[in-house]
Every structure is written in structure tokens, then in C-alpha cells.
Length: 475
Image 1 (cartoon, rainbow, N blue to C red):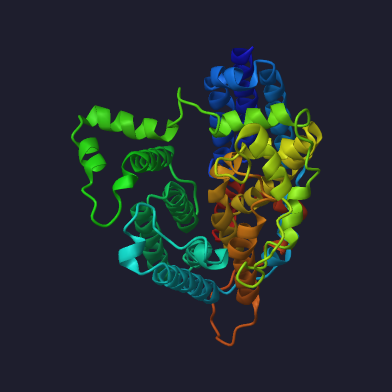
Image 2 (cartoon, rainbow, N blue to C red):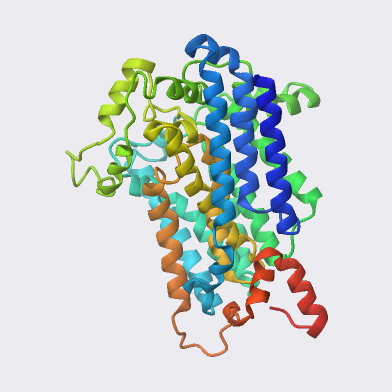
């Protein structure tokens, strides 16, 4: 049955992907493809590969229900992605106006400076560079520092997005964007942050596509994906060496191998759990959640999200801040020995199942599909409007990690202050009237006829080429 499920999921994935590619004329930059790749790797390959461990720990009877949860989740995501009103995005305020390119670039620089200053202050607060870099992945004072300071460096991503959008019309901003990308990649490499490395490569690809106003060649995409996989796999093996005073024993041992072995080890480093699973492996924990709810632990009935109303207040201001999730965490620790707040996650669908079983899986999967469709609606007009480029480049790179995290609602405490708020603020400022004459502006897309708007959303590249052929003008 496991093998049947594996192939059934693969066929559904192929159908879903083929449909989207056909609708968008092979726009493979969209975030949905990252998400689906990660989704299949986790719930297709991962669930099949871990089936024996799951059967030993939670019983074979839980596997069919796990398969049902995965299929229902994929169906909800497909439905949410399908019904999102993509064409109406063109009528949203941030795409009606004509953003001022100079202000886009300036705001990107501001976000970069704030992010760098925040990280430098956090390092100083943690005892200085000698202390901070004495431990792999950073010895920061995370427990005694507000998350608003710890996560300030993630403002680099929307900062680079603003600079990349400005670079679509003013080449001077491209150099600043490239400098930001180099800094983002180098710093995350030193810290051994695989997510940061992937974000750097993805944002680089998106920025180059926006500047050249066309999709990158498949060969370029293949090279970018291979580079990301090799670097991320290498970090899994060697990042324990990345600290002051290190002898780099793991790194030297890694490079003493033959080129073939180096490639194999680096690529397999991204599948670190393959064949070796434990009770705290994410996919095994997902099966554990499916088993214990509601037979041994009652559903939480969405109580987890009550924390969203209080999590905005830093502990330093409200030391006795309540935690609505504590009761459920204690119950899960007693039954499973771990929980959704203990480090390893029960994955996206495990978290959704905890709330109300299959009903919450389907409903929240629809919401997830809506979010991905919102991001991709901007990706479809990435070449045509700088505000769309800002939104897409800022958010699309996070799609790969979504299946293994706790869901879009659980990510709001980080997503809102470090992505949504700066993006909205920057776009509003860029729309304000400028005192400078001769500012480079975009013509508002909203004046296009309704049929042209649909063409823009479905296949902007083809429409742009047609426009150039007919009257020799750009957009």
C-alpha cells in the first residue's frame, strides 16, 4: 500500500505541476514549484522511506490515515491555489500606482542598514565577536534577547528585493543589490545556515530574471539548484567546524575524498535522515500526531493561535506573558516525549491535524494554497511591475521550507514584522509624490483592458513580446 500511495502522490504532483506550467507558459520561477518539491520529498519519499520506523513506533494502522491526510492536504492546497482571484491582484493599491524607482532603492538600502546594525548589536549583546563566533552557528544570547532584535538580519531579504526592483529600471541599484546578495550569502555560509544559502541563490535568480525581463534558461536553473544542493549538503557535514579556534577536521576530511565521493556526500547531506529515523524525526513525529489525536490527546481546537494576540509583546516588557500552547505541549510531552514546540516539527500537515483532524487539514491547506497563489500572482508579472517584483522576491524564497514548518498562521509573528510590514511600508512610501522631476516611473497596469489583464496574469512574457512586436514599445 505504501508503494501505491507513493506513485499516486507522484502522479498527482505531475498533473498539478503540468497544469500550472501550461497556464503560465512554463514560468518555473513560481514559488508553488519549490513548495511541491519539498512537499513530495517530505510526504512522498520521506513517508515511504520511514514507513518501517513509523510502523515500529506507532503501529502499521496509522499509515493509511497518514496517506489520507497527505492527499487531503494536497487537495486543499490545489483548491486554494486554483480559486485565488489572481487577475484581481492588478487592481490592488500597490499595483495601481507608479512606484518611484529612486525611493524603492533608497528603502532597500535602509532595510539593509537596519538589518546589519541589528545583527552587529546582537553580536555585541552576546559578548562580542570573540564569544559569538566561538561556537558553530553562533553563540548568541537568544534566551535573553527579544526576537525583534535576533531576527532583524532577515530584513536583508526584503531589502535586496527593493534594490532588485529598483534595478529593473535604474542599473545603479543593481550593484548595491549584488553587494547585499554577497553579504547575505557569505554571512549565512559562515553561520552554517542552510536556509540563508538557499534564499541567497533563489533571490539571485529572481533578481537576474527581473533585470533581464525574461525567464532564465533551464541550464542556468539547473546550475543554480545544483550549487544550492552542494553548498547546503556541505554545510550539514562541515558547519560544526565553523567557529573561532576550529581545526576544521570535518572540512579537511571531506575534501580529502575523491571528487566523486565529495559530490555524493554533499548531495546526500541534504537527505540526512534517509534510512535513519527516530521518534523525533519530522516525518515520524507527523505520524505520531496523527496517531495520538484525538484518541490519546484531545484536539487543541485552534487554541495555538491564541498566542498570536500576545506574542507581539516582548518578554522584556511582559515577563509573565501567558503561553496558551503550554497545556497541549505538556500533554504531548507525556505521550510522545516531544511536541510541536520542542525543536523538531510535526510538519505542516501534522500541525494542521492537531487542531481538528481532517477538517482542519483541509481548511488550512486551502489557506496555504491561497498564500502561495498570492505570492505567485506577483511572480507572474515579475517583469512588468517593480512593486510585484518586491512582493515576489521578498516572499517566494520561503516556500521550500513551508512543508516542514508549522504553517502560515504560526509564522505570522516572524512574517509580519520582518517581511509584510517593511514591504507594505516601502511600497507606500515609493508611491508618495516626489518633488524631483524626471523621476523614472512605471505606467499603471490597471489601465489595460480586462482581457489584456488576464493575458498579463496568465503569460506576461508572451504578452510583452507581442507588445514589442506590434508597436516597438516596452512596458
